[in-house]
Structures are given as structure tokens and as C-alpha cells.
Image 1 (tube, rainbow, N blue to C red):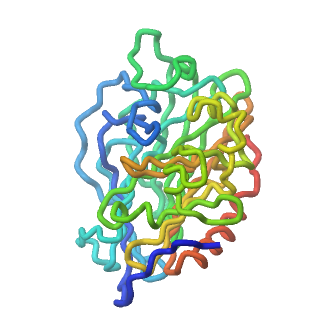
Image 2 (image 1 turned 135 degrees about the vertical axis):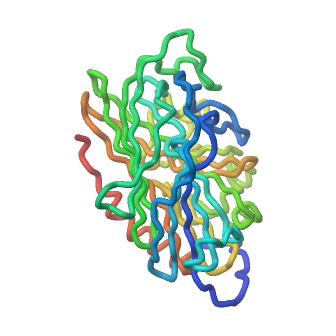
Length: 355
């Protein structure tokens, strides 16, 4: 049931939509996260390696896509971040009008094991094209233990800082038709099994997202796609910005870290789908976002962003977990766009064995 759907602005032939992805923001924000609707540094550490001067902006590829869309992927150098621009004029790569909105995606914002969040990653990684795969960019990184005196920009519980944790990962972004696929392939470098929790931050910026986003952004509670603002405003629910996916709860330590007492409170475990839906301001397109392995849905109303954070409960020593997050744009109203996205994601929901 869809209630309170905003009126669609009419008409006008949309000539296309440009997704432009560019690396942005600085390593100084490395691992920043959000708590109770205000930005903090829960997720990250100040990397101990001195960053190099940023290289010049590089255009990695430009492509025409289905539905009159077009895509441009750029990199500016700072690792983790890409920026996704939606455009009204397909193929007009010089057009900088952000009237349909912009997303800045940090891949990842944080990553952790059963023993807490991992730090000590190299801040000088770079998104690079993949030879023979013109619609793909990726980078790799590996953590190293950090000493007890190394400063960590982290506002959570001290016990959730895993200074000796060891992980390596490959982050990959693929443009496939109308969708942007984000893959995190994370390997457990420890000598014992662990869980893997991955936080990818999808931040709204640009007029088309920030203007009225709270009246357009929805999540699924029970069988209804409700306005997400009802959750963090306490409209029929205990007010909070963090909610857990009932079918894929993370460990009690992570639940308590993000929302104290939530592991024993079923009222916090009401999200029925890890996906977030946002009809775009143009009244023609609809964006859906999320991970089929999503365990927690999080909104920051003050510094607008959304999360659908993936969780794998058991990764063997030396094993690798593959976690996927998808952003899709449809030339369709909300209800048919949701139906199509859920059908497409059924394949992604099929459990893949951790290697």
C-alpha cells in the first residue's frame, strides 16, 4: 500500500538521464559515519600513512545506456568515494545541472569483523579501470594492525575497535543497463571464522535530492512502503534513525553499537526489506537502492544519507565474502519500479557460499 505519494510534476519530454560518477571528497573524511542523525567519526580511523598529492581528474568511460540514459565515470583520486550525478539531457556530458540530484557513495564507509571495526587501510588507493571490461572500475585495499597509541577517529564503544583485525577487500563498481552494481569482495585474513559487516554510505546532495527528500523516500515496514521520516520522527514507531532487517539481523554486538538495547527489542527489528525507494523530483524516474544482504537501514536526516548495510555471519579463515549493493533508476512511477527492482534482486538474494 502506497500512502502520501507526492504529486508528479507533469510533462515535458525527458531527453535522457546522465549518471556521472566521479571520485570526490578527501581522505580526511575517511571512515566518517553518522550517529543519531548527526555526523560523527564512528566508522573510521585517521589512516597513519601520509596521503600523496591528488592526481588530475580522469574520465574513465562514457556510455549510452537503455531508457535514454547515459553514463560517465570519472575519478579524482581519493579512494572510497564516487559521485553519481543524474542528468536530464542524455549524452550531454558537459551539462552540470544537478536538478535530478546527486549521490556521493563511500565504498566502504566502514568494515568490521566479529571483533569490531577494522582500521589501518592504505589511504592512497585509487579507482582504476578494469582491462577488457569498459564499464567497470575497481580498487583493492588491505588492513594492517594498528598500535594502542594510534589515534582512531571513532565515537562508538572502545570494545568495537579491532586494532589487530586483518581484512583485504576489492571494491568494484559496474554499470549494467539501468543499474549501478557495487561489489565488496572481502577476505578474512585471520586464523579463525568471522562475520563481515560492511557499511556503504549513500549521501544525498544536489537540489533534486535534498529538496523534499523526506516526502519522497520510503522503506518497507510490514507490507507497506511508508515514508521513512515516520521512523525517525516517531510517527507510530519509537523514534530512531537506525532500524534492523528482521530476516537478517546482525550480531547483538553490532546492534547494540548502533542502537543500544535493540538486540532484545523487537520494535527495532521491523524492516521487511533492505531496500530504499525514492521517486525523483522530475516526477518521471524512480531510484531504488540497497543490498540483498542488508541487515540495517539507516537515515541521517541532518546530513542526508541512506544506508543498507550488508552482513555475512560466517566467513571461514582465509575465506571470502561477496556482498553486493545496487542502485537502479527506472523511467517508471514508484509502484512498478519497486516491483521491477524486487524481481531483479531475487537473483541477488540467492545465498552465495562464502569461499
